[in-house]
Image (tube, rainbow, N blue to C red):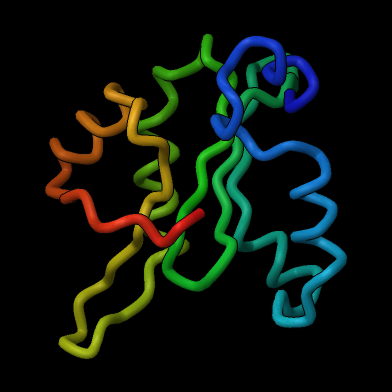
Length: 124
């Protein structure tokens, strides 16, 4: 999916292979293989073609990787991330921060419809 979408989307839409390799191998805080797998949601077509993923880079974050022809899956991906990647705040509320580009209007609208607000960028 990453190779195919690389030529279809603007830089930063999906992580590139180098970032995935760094995420997998250059960190010691990812836990066991089972914990790592539990923190990655995959979306595929009925014939098994990978078209989307959601994962965290840090606790309470959600990064969506998606083939642009499958934007209709974003709501399900967001719900999965809310259920699996959120963390408890000091007040006991579950929160998750979605990391996305400023120019992704459809994803901004989707998240706004679910009560999310834009926060200042963390410089990534």
